[in-house]
Amino acid sequence: MSRPPVTLRRRTLETDVQVTLGLDGTGRAEVSSGLGFLDHLLTSLARHAHFDLSLTCAGDLKVDDHHSVEDCGLALGQALDQALGERKGIVRFGHAYAPLDEALCRAVVDLSGRSYAAIDLSLQRPSIGDVAAENVGHFFHSLAMASRSCFHLSVIAGTNDHHRAEAAAKALALALRQAVGLDGGTETPSTKGVL
View: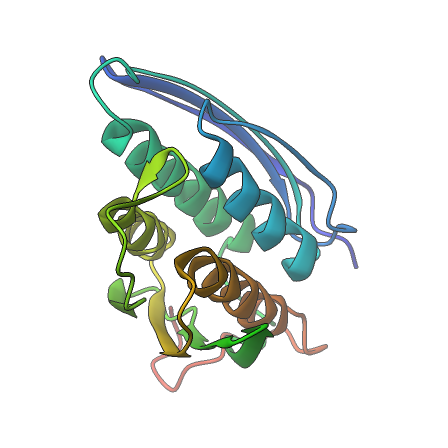
């Protein structure tokens, strides 16, 4: 069973983000956020989660990268939340390790309907490309909050910040790929009966 893609727009005085997300895709990504490194992370996330993703962002980059990074995370999270619907029949939990050369990241996710994020990327540089290092973690946090999901994302080895951040995107993608999967059931995967 293939779930229909979700399209939405998040428009504020600071950004205008348009996103289309298909959970049952092939990993095709068409991304233009105005920030090269964010595009790189989004493309990697889509590719390894097997999501089809189209995302554009027109943001106030004359200020800095914060609003664009945050709102891309929020818009993608809102799309993920909508695409999951009532979350019936999903696997719900996912976990993965992803290496990138010397870097290694662990991701554990629960599509619980409750927002929580524990993000530890151990980044050292002030920025990676055109994105402030603090905003890389903020992107993952925003994605978790808006998707009503629980993310535990920990870089456990690495010396190169680009590798650490990209390993985090890949590990999260692999964990999400598991968690959004359909288990063949029709029930909500919770003793509460709702997520």
